[in-house]
Image 1 (tube, rainbow, N blue to C red):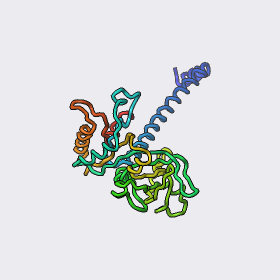
Image 2 (tube, rainbow, N blue to C red):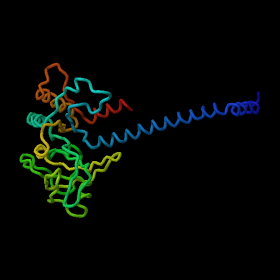
Image 3 (tube, one colour):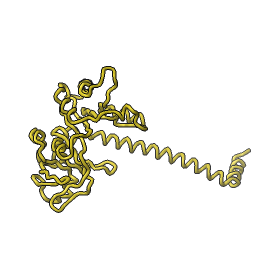
Length: 278
């Protein structure tokens, strides 16, 4: 059978089975498209993850109640975990010898911020921390000053604002030493953060940070928080993790031999978890 005859038979078969041929072609197109979409989705997620991880320094360690990534429903051991409290953070800081730069970290509210007749949308994140919060989360102060010890000790109602908040309520007016209101309380603006941008529409500049002690006064201290700290150098990450883990087990009265009732997380551990899914 020559090529011309073979081609003629194939063409006849296609004409005789148009629907089946079309469905076969459609299946091939869908298959190729699915591979492209899957590959693109993984690439997008990988880029999103890497950009998000850049928020934290490679030497930053986070202590929190639950795993950073959870698949499926939480089991009883996770549901029964106690919240990490502000007192736990303070006790950890007192006992640490290796770790440094400790800050409690929590979101007190999502609300509007007002200045005179200007106000933001009611979606500004109100974060609580101390002077170490910004280094741990890779923020730089563009203008003004960081929190000092007295701000924390005396729970002063001062605020450091993100660029989105500045642009929305101050327009062209200089913001430092101006009084804004958050959930009815006055706060003096002492600094503006450099613009950090957004990922997938989630802005890192639509926020206000207040001393965590002022946040306790305004919103109450009976809440779960995270704790952030740093290793003195990248080569001492594991040593710092071991120290933090041991101290937290004592603070939370975990019995010898029992599993930790908290998580100690680093960029490397999050990267390892993410790689398992991609």
